[in-house]
Amino acid sequence: MIQGKWFSPGSDLSALLSVRESVFGRGADDLDGSSWNALVLEDSVPAATGRIWWDNGSFWLGDIAVLEDHRRRHLGDLILRLLLFKAQAHAAREVRLCCPVNLTGFFSRLGFRPQSSIDPDHVEMMIAGDAIDLDTCKNCPRSSCPGRK
Image (cartoon, rainbow, N blue to C red; front, side):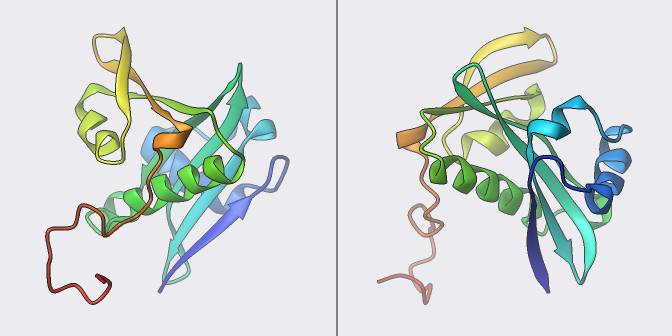
């Protein structure tokens, strides 16, 4: 079973830090005190995480991570949608993130567009708040899907 859990700023993050440490090689930092963190559990095991925070007029996403053993199950997509939903719920004007260049396609699928290169390996991406669309059926090619009207 897949479950999602939110951690408000200042919460105990021990349940999700193992994912961050495994994927990025680092644990808690100063940004955690002002971030909302999302955790996805697969069969009660922490599998994916990400966070959102407010800075200089924009919501920012970061540390979106899926443990290697849990990849290719759309958990990264789920974390990203949870974070975007949180931004929508707070009337985000825009949402930004920095990511490795090789991951721009992943974020582009939900409307993020490159804004500037940070270095040869990383790019800043942005989506306007009114462009966030979490409708999973909108671009689905399956015409026989039971969720289609």
